[in-house]
Image (cartoon, rainbow, N blue to C red; front, side, top):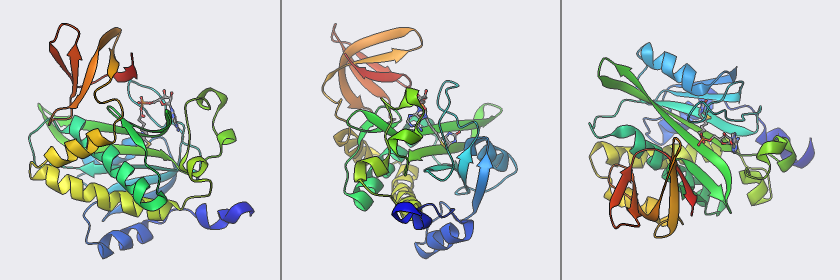
Length: 272
Ligand code: BT5
């Protein structure tokens, strides 16, 4: 096989991921379902959450036939090339959890990519990880409600790991990239996953104790849009101002031309 693909394309094994998590004393990934092809790992994790599977249960697939983005968009998830996975979280805090968990996941992935590949990605609010404006990772956190409260959260992460540019459909080629393209060599998925899980575990533990301030500062350092003119698109509206970073709940702070501060929980950030 070309370029050592035998090693890098080896299917991810539940027992190996579980053993690695146990060795590190981790909670996230103690129970793993490593599957071949699923519709969406978020959907499988949601079903397991409804069946009562505990926090830290992880679903990972080699391929998704209907990988999901936000707002009913699709996420391109071809076999063996990426890390497509979802975790069940049952957070203890009553804060608005979904926005902040999305940001903490982005920060954990950026930290892990830097640690394993010595590459520093940027984070774009709320859920994109990029190199030079091209996206290699997206995060989709979804709450499962029971009555009026959120019973659990499914945190879904999609990372383009070993794609070559020709592996992307034409329409994604101008805006997408992968870790392999940026590193200039194939990237081992198991080691990267292990690093992401331990980085996220630490951030999540602080989050459960209500300590977010340091993570918010670290997130802002990785976001080149901070202190720049920006637009946030929400539904059909565009709000313009200076992006002042995020508040302690992960909401975007946009200083409008009239001096007022807009605080936004959802939307799409772009340069003005
Ligand atoms: C996201 O949505 O970026 C969230 C993606 C989350 C995917 C993971 S994979 C595991 C778990 N299971 C799932 O079903 N989903 C999660 P959004 O910000 O809405 O971006 C979606 C847009 O990104 C699409 O409309 C495309 O333009 C683009 N896109 C789709 N696939 C891509 C890819 N593989 N790489 C880069 N860009 C992509």
